[in-house]
Length: 390
Image (spheres, rainbow, N blue to C red):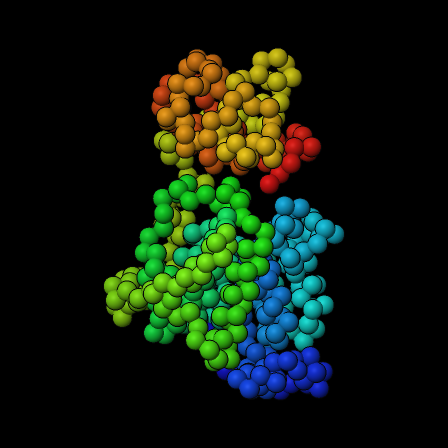
């Protein structure tokens, strides 16, 4: 955690700006100055990072760090309120810093335009008092957790999916860590991403604001933070419930006798193959590029194209597949496939991950199948930009 530093006091402008905080007896000038002298790292400047960053900046957190390396896309604007239409195509951190500086010029914003990794996480996390984890993938969640435990930095965790969210506080001195709750990640592909499963646009606003609230409570010492508790939110029923989370005395990283004392390869830990290494399974899945498919179609030798997305996804964007069978239904509906084993078959989904699974299955069943590299996203980007992305 960040070393001791010189304490700064509030300026006359800040006294006016934070008047509603200062009149709270439980908060007062002491709480506001605690925020001014605090630093928070937000991992991810997307759906959760947007409201969290804005409310933390508005509240007067003196130093906010942002980790992100993406550019703003039109599909972000449904929920990522840090950005506007004019920001599409810009690096997220450029747009985020500009917006936060306009919201509160008293806040220092540090940009970390990198992919958080085992090589840089400890150095970055150790610069801050609290981390707010708004990531959307398991390798980074475990990485953030372990980096927080190893540096002694509290981790305010949040996650969202479709209509549901979770919030908790991990990696405090006496509380549990993320691994105490989820000792091991789910198998790759079992849990769909938000891009595949969707997310209600207001949900990250709700959950990200709760995340910011927990950060402020930790920094000011007010209230009862969600240490040892997991808040679960169902936006459809508007139901909030809290589960107790106990510290695991045998946790590999936060127990008194940890078996892991350094950061590891989190992609491997989560069962994600190394893209630079070829395996027998990788070599068994041939790929077709979108340009190759376009050329075949133009020449009148088009292969049979199978879409393995959900029906509602096909309603959003289509590349005129010959048939749609969702990947999870394919084993039970294989007899419905309108292509024989000898027919050249190209399988596609949104980005290529689900279709890779389907292609492996089909080839095991004797079909002449290949995976469309990059899926419908690549088709839209490289062949037909009239096809919407989502």
